[in-house]
Image (cartoon, rainbow, N blue to C red; front, top):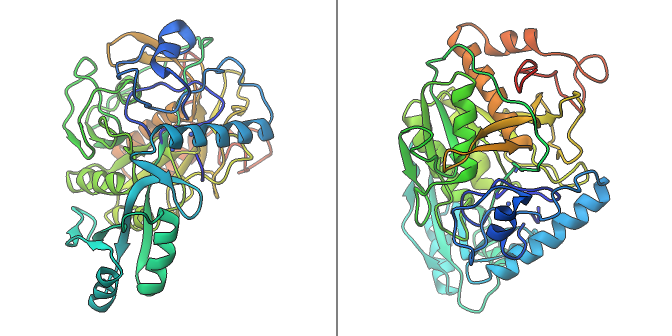
Length: 415
């Protein structure tokens, strides 16, 4: 997917972390654009590309082909502006430059890779996940795409992945009206994979998994605030962005997942979008075996974009968004399966400076859905049965590809 950090194409992103691909990519002077009322004032340095943001945020009613073209242009800009740390991988997705991730690497294959000029670092056991990953340094002058081809030949039985970048899937256009309403607090621990939340929002256990992390993020702060408003009382945050231009990468997300679940998080919310990635797919499967529920956004790249990950991995609860009239967000992406919809517009939360901000995007729908799932888990029994019972059927009768199994949190966002 040639897209974390979010984004998406065609909409304004609530900036807050590093440069990262939603739940999609950056234009000149992102911070200035946001500060001029197109979105939110940013706290990141203006000279660095952060969450991909689209200055044309007011023009969100565009068809799928336009969204797709905009997405491709923004991805190209993102990679060009961060060429020192980011390049396209074999599948055309932005990834960390000069590094590959390998699992199941046999000793003979490791020797062959060293002989071919690859730097092979010691295996890293990923906390809470039960498997190891080896990082490969690509030979100087070799592209990431060519390196992937070489590794597949030299280590045919290993699982190889680029350190693909994921973008946040939230936006902040100017016309939102409502406010998420709080409900009874739940003690089920919820983990956030995103940028760090400001202490002005709350003092949450936080660990950084990127250069410069933890670092206050507008997007991460808004997500944490929405969870608090929705009644979640036990929150932990894995900052996978920090100040790293290649933040939101697969390895950072995998490390964050392992730390959150090892620390007791029963629900993990991921409002990021990227391509399918072998390392992250294995990490998701590992945390699911530990009993954790992963809730992820479908992103904001529109219905013509490639399927969003991690929302499309097996067992992940995929969330889309609707507006105040229960219509699917025009910019909502897609996944290989869809579980639920939740309000993704007409929402107000707080940014890293504790200012009220207007929100739009599948990132925010995902938090409302995650809160309802956490509350259902706290109630005991099968959370899916409880949530299905309250889901409001929209569109075609029964589950469908636009709204999934129905709308959760129907009375949130001022309804």
